[in-house]
Length: 638
Image 1 (spheres, helix red, strand yellow):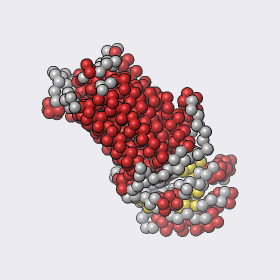
Image 2: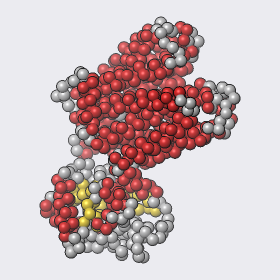
Image 3: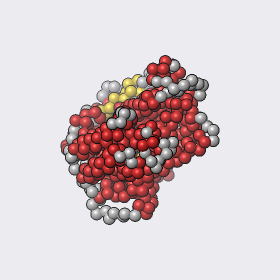
Image 4: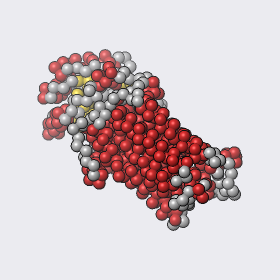
């Protein structure tokens, strides 16, 4: 389905919150919200009852109950994620979600018997089945979104899902703890609440619109071991996607380290009671929610992987500062929230937790959107299943590392510092393997710290298929600005001298830019550039050129050269005219002499514009006509 067809069926909403008013998203959102909340009501209530009413249960030690319950819940992710990915690819995803919600009702009925009979064995069985429920739902959830959201809505939609999930986790944690604490009647309240939430989730799931099978002919492999290995091999076929899966799994390692440490951190370091633990969880969840929602605004309504390095930097900085903020604290006892807030040193800890989790939202949402947008639809759910498998392994590794370090005499703040340093090392390693992340980060940083870009007609850049982008050439950063705004990667043809500019060269090489030289200077490089352009267009890429052949030193357009005709003669593809406005006179332009000699010539965050025109057929792509179009798009704003 083309972008135009999707737009006719599902007109783009004004913002991510508007999705909650549309049937294609709202029932799905509330279904997953209920599921995430119910998971945590059940797990927290079970853990709380085992911890504080251990005498009424048998066969489970109160001191290790939390670890056992967590491990039992995670186990199905390892065993059945591969199978669940196949099911999500083979069958209608709306039907799958309704079947999973039916299963949840049956599981909660079993759990009710366990709560009312104080049976640890039955509750552990229900915990395992709830893990299975989440295992089945995960691939369906993330494979559903690209079928009902337009590409420019994926980041906002994923942000809403991430925000909703963490809010549901927070509410479930609070509700589960409070209900379990009701004297005598606690188990009955928990049993009733979990059943009621499951029923509500099933009712809402009935309104989810159809999401047809992406591979109806798929033959299910019921062997979880061989299928798990097959899924991991499938994920590795796209290197960027696979490394993104590892990046998300690392986030689960990072988050699990903090979340599982909050109880002991609150008690031993901050001197807080269970209400302080709840507050820490609330701040952490709020930070992730805020970060997830801000992603849409910061990304400009597209999949912006430049936010991933930005997120990892913030995670490292504020995770490390939790160590520095808390290492001098000396609690004298266990106190409530009021006493906790009376000590201003605790405010810094809360600020750090909020900010590190907010940056975690910046980190995770673009990665999920990237995976969804770059996976083949026929096996998208199986890639998500591979992600769930890796997530489970990384969470287990997190528990092993935390147990090992704390057993070796490390304090919890020291554990946080080690995690921060590991995060920096993992980030550097990931970005060395996929420089595209850092390249996009530099482009994103440019248009958010140096310029304020007003964009017009960006949706006219085709979602798929080859095209040539032509634009006026005003400064050394023209290509970076266009790349930062474009919803798709663009391979720019550029002067070989600009291609070699320090720092910028890294960006251009990573983006697959094509260096070119005049025929009288280097005819071999010129021929090689035309050959590379043809290969890129035949592969379906966007190729960007500056037909003037040089950066203007007058502010006006120079005549467009004949190179565009040579390109179109060999590979007839549409041409997209673009005009840059307001860059003349900026630090990177050649006004009044050499560029990059007067840093604050225009100040910070100066306003510039980018205007995209309608596509032009190849046969109309003459230099003279294209120059007229670009000049008209630019107008008088140089």
